[in-house]
Image 1 (spheres, rainbow, N blue to C red):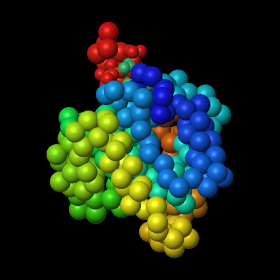
Image 2 (cartoon, rainbow, N blue to C red; image 1 turned 180 degrees about the vertical axis):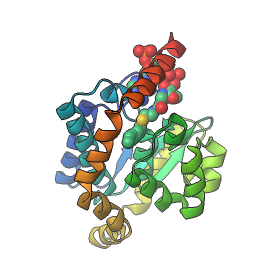
Image 3 (cartoon, rainbow, N blue to C red; image 1 turned 30 degrees about the horizontal axis):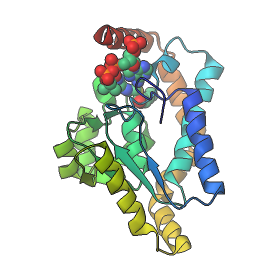
Length: 239
Ligand code: CO8
């Protein structure tokens, strides 16, 4: 990902990611490492500006593009690793959770923190976390909107490994891909999809309802006020 400053996911960036995933699949890619060009941020999650003063059709397109990208990422026939050498809140955490393996560096915060922002992580975000860390830990983390530090993320199984720095993180991600390289492709892919199918189907059969929830939510005046204040607090911080 290379969308400075924080790889926030707007419609255009989501489309780019989606196109890249389609191309990798068509080219019969043998493995992908999802990483960031930023030294400190993996991805700040959804671009909050896409949800501020929304226009109906643009907002619908934004959400559908997110769904499209995620459906592709979650179901790739090839192995995927997230090299998390920077913070990964909310949608950034979703991207990492959607890969098959996660390597993180020290001093990173990662989690589905939506509750803390006064929003509800969509069901499929929640499913992704539940599938990685299990029901009990996911329930606790999601209710609190907990952001895990590196040690906590490793302890709870949200990530698989800690590496000292970005270079080591990429090297460990490559090692994971190497460990998968000799597995029979079809068997590997079939098992992966077997595990992920119910989560994928839940969104595929409920896409319209999921979009409706998002639209109805962001069009509420009090939600707009909250987004406005949050955006102001973020830019004050960097100013
Ligand atoms: N979207 C848009 N802009 C952002 C975002 C974002 N998610 N995050 C940061 N920015 C902007 C800031 O406003 C700032 O802009 P400017 O320079 O113009 O003032 C710039 O990026 C740099 O930000 P920081 O100074 O904060 O950068 P840091 O390196 O200090 O910190 C962080 C990086 C840790 C990523 C920090 O920016 C942060 O915490 N950002 C907010 C992350 C966040 O809350 N994401 C949640 C997005 S919502 C989501 O992903 C799922 C929502 C599901 C919706 C469900 C509805 C029903």
